[in-house]
View 1: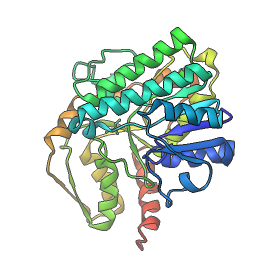
View 2: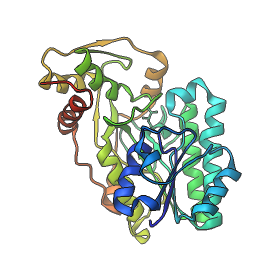
View 3: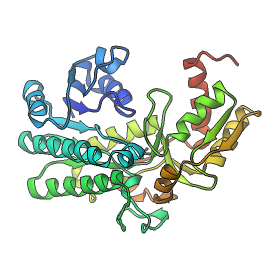
View 4: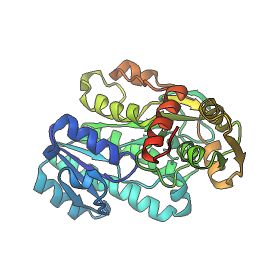
Length: 319
Ligand code: SER
């Protein structure tokens, strides 16, 4: 990666990945794009930024011609709960945007990264230690777009030789940008409300385990995979990765170690619970370890301490 163009730069991952890439590769070599501009987001102000609607292939092509990147990181997508509410729009953005981006990767021989998700699995997938290669029959529109995206990336690699790489992200937890419309968002919201209100009402019910990861590990994973020796990659696309797996009562228990009076309540959202129930309890990350050295540094305890420390500063909370 020398010159990188990103889509979805103001989203949950992009807001941090753009800054991290600018540290590593130089501000001018990381071109951030998004459908909106936000002068309070450093992705817009600390380096090149362009407006882009990813469903408009000609506009995307014009930016590739203007900036001549060698790498495209395509992040623009709707998350799981929004996809269920707006399935037609989800297909248009998640798949339409991906096809446009892959076509440019083919035409201009760009190295290519796009995230898949634990949402690419479904109710018939083995739930525990879910293998890298297994049954993928998701029953959500988010999952349908993620599996289709994985297959399309594989196809562009095999048919056209595009250097496509990807990971199946679990729920990503960060104190910087909010996720917005995901099923795993409860595990971000809980930290804010624990500090601000001393209690949290979870929309996911007790006992529902899902894979999660702290954002610093997710950013490292993207860079490590993109810099990995292609000869070592047996799986070309969408590696299982995860930092931890927990249920709502387990994260609540960890928060209580720091905030003993914290109270957890439940008011289950049937839509998001249904999505969570269709996803694995915990996935097997061995292929990512073997093929490109993936390793997560944060477990639930380390992440919880860091989230609370960083959010206290962000929210200006003493003690
Ligand atoms: N965090 C995502 C979601 O809940 C999972 O990929 O939609």
